[in-house]
Length: 248
Ligand SMILES: [Zn+2]
Image 1 (cartoon, rainbow, N blue to C red):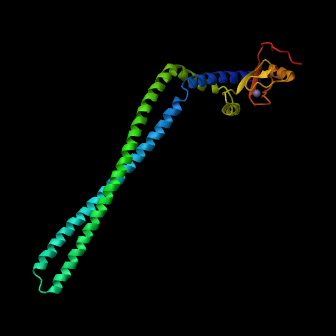
Image 2 (cartoon, helix red, strand yellow):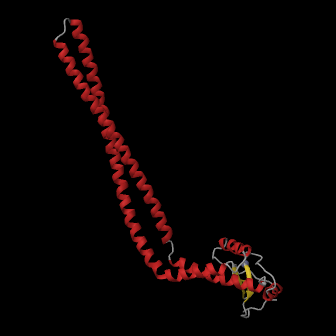
């Protein structure tokens, strides 16, 4: 059998009560969960940078090794040319070999220059890496502290939170999908997390706009779903407390 409007409103009120309790629990954690997430993101960023620095340094070291190997080959060649020079038959052959030796020596000087450049670059990267690493260490300390703080606060309310979540799971099965969706939508758009409110002292309990007496009478009857004309929150009932100032 279909639920009556009154039953639906009661179910929504109960859901609101559960959600508001969960909101209260989340509030005790303040900005800590967000701060922990931000720190974790920042740390990943630093770790990525550090591993980039590391691979840049490794590449430069490979480059240096290659130049050094080329220099060793060059030395061997020069030695070979010098041996050949001992056995030349004329000046022309001697000069040709001298030219080869000069070219090899130029290559080796160029390699020296490249090696020095690579080493200077490595030193710069290492400076950046050291700075990044010390910030990373600071952030890791921060994260440890904040996580500890958060786990103490979370620990205090963990059992209550779990019970509320379980109760919510069970309870939402009693509410039709369409209604649940509008409830969620109103709640998401509301700063205080309230989607279902009472009319209290003649005003909407969510946005405090005045609800006209005739509308209050309709709400009290609980024969149809009525929402606040100003904020769109569901007005589930009218609080029995007499308004302080009687309005006409
Ligand atoms: Zn309202």
